[in-house]
Length: 443
Image (cartoon, rainbow, N blue to C red; front, top):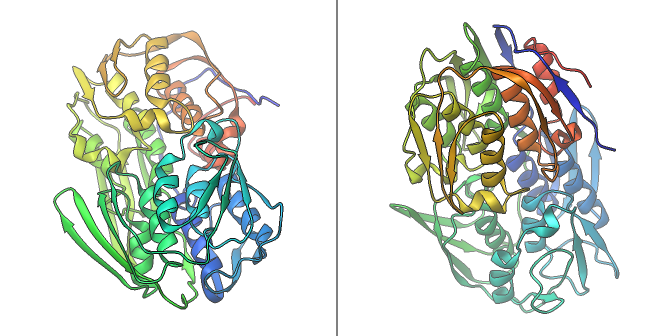
């Protein structure tokens, strides 16, 4: 059923502290690695979203014993290649490209065909980027030449290590190869464009043999297979991609300030914060500390006195890829013309985000110039909306929904936004936190 919210008032100024949900990338990676460890791994603050719940359900179908409650998640791993394979297993990844692409890597020793399915949105996304390297390891995919879900994968008992050049800058592809390498004898070598490095950090912490050499915009990664992985007890830090929506709401709301506690500020994830500061934001990381290889801090942000346009350096694209929609709202309120390029990857997400972002900006009176991989946004510092706006037909993309809600609360107007349930994908407490800050909506 299509759940709708109505917003017809701007949010009032606020001075608050919040905690956002656990990091989605780390939650999924922790669960997958815990399933391959030997012993009990325990996580607190695991993200309780559809993407993570689908991860847990897929692992249970593969025979992994899991205890999940409101306080923690406990996974009993039986070591590498310990899944219990049965004929006719169907694994549903839902909306999660991360889950689907990483889980496939752990199935390449399966003696049977395993069917991977997803929702309507995920089934439109191309899987060739992971099929190619996994075939090199020795996996087989069916139907032949098909590159979208549903897909069948069949493993091989005689895997071989590979050398692979990852030229997209995709953490999912890189992590897929790294997980597959755990089951391949010898050394697997990856030359990868820089992207999120959560998997590398986890490998180092778990003492999985890994060497990393960084050269400008690429990393040379070498992984040796290992007999056993140690269990990992982990307190998942808060997600910076989710935090970004409230950072932007604060920037766009007069006389407001916000502290977001215990956020993962991994250097491969803070591109959005750097971009926003270049546009006139006042975002500061305080109480910095290191937690099992990841950097954690409290984010302090205040209303922006004035915002300026940006010609966004492409070096930040990978580390801000999930936050560009919300950055576009800041560009809409900035003085001058902002330019973002080399963003074709945005159209390969849950929806065609570059196109939808432009469409929403046009709907609220902001001029844009769009190509298949770039956007110019003609900002209006006096943007103040009075009309009626309806947002629908966006493939239930959680980030499009949240972008629309932030626009409504920051710019005004009367908004009818469809598919509010989409936030269950990544940020179930989004609307609860909106209420905590004083935002009003009707469901």
